[in-house]
Structure formats: structure tokens, C-alpha cells
Length: 177
Image (cartoon, rainbow, N blue to C red; front, side, top):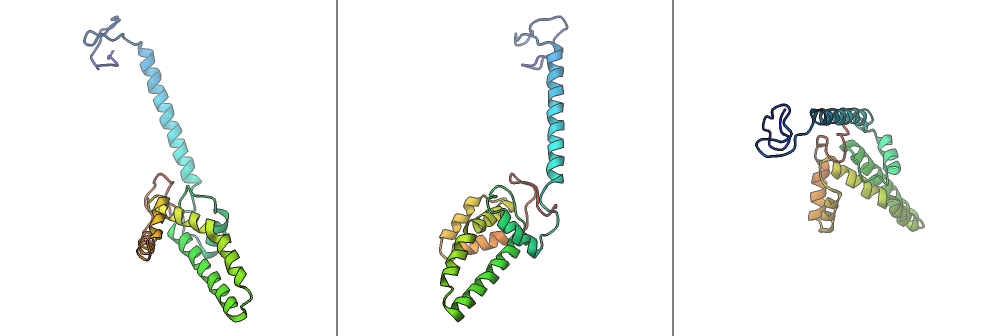
């Protein structure tokens, strides 16, 4: 038997450790803790396997899927979004803004539509940007760089162009790499 406090070998039948004086715990307790450790490890493995099976799509997201995800995951600030999801959603937003600008310029009566559109996409845009930063291993607080004129936007743009990081605290790599 081995003392759980100092690691000294204990003779069978001793009630106290000859080195540190600690009471000797029954061998069954040691085995029980080993069994509980094995159960915990098996639970971790099954959770890891579960999270890998039900992770984000392992292929790049298409244009239509990115738009759907943009509007359905608008409250999700805790997971990750890959580059394809992010940039297709940004492309969609640019195209809609161009169409609204054309309508306002040509007809002049749809000015309120631009303000409404901006309010509709505010939260989903922030959520998407936070998920994209999570994908490269950065916190969503990193978006505060955008408060710096010009330089802040360049910093965020460079970060959003980076490749996905391996699995991190925000989940597995959405590209499956």
C-alpha cells in the first residue's frame, strides 16, 4: 500500500504512515477514486465525440446558407463562424445596401427604409462579427478596436481574414480541420 499524503510504502496492517503519521486509508477508497476518474474520462470522451458529431458544418457555407445563418443565429454570441459564412453575409449586406442606395438616389422616397434596414441588421452584424473573432481565438471585446477611426477597422478587417483556429473555448473548428 502507498500513503496518499506522502507516497511512502506502508506495510499491510499499519494504521498510520511511518513517515508522515497520516492515517492509512483503505485500499478500496483508492480503487473507488480510480474508478470515478475512469468514469469521468469516459464521460468526457463521449461528450467530445457528441460535440464533434453535432458541430457546425464541416464544409464551407454557401451564400444562401450564410444569409439564413445570419438571421437565425442573431443571438448566438458563444460559438464560431467560419470565413465563408462571414464573408458571404458581408457580401449580402453590401448588395442590399447598394440596392437601397440606388432606390434612395433614384426615387428619393425610400430614405426611411435605409434606417429601418440598419436597425434590423445591427444585432445580427455584431453577433456575426463576435462569432468570427471567436473562430480565430479572439474575444468579442476585440470589436472595440472599431472605435478607433480607420486604424481600428483595418485591425478588425485583418483579423477577420485570418484562417480558423483549431478547437478553442468557443467550440470546434467550423471547417473540421
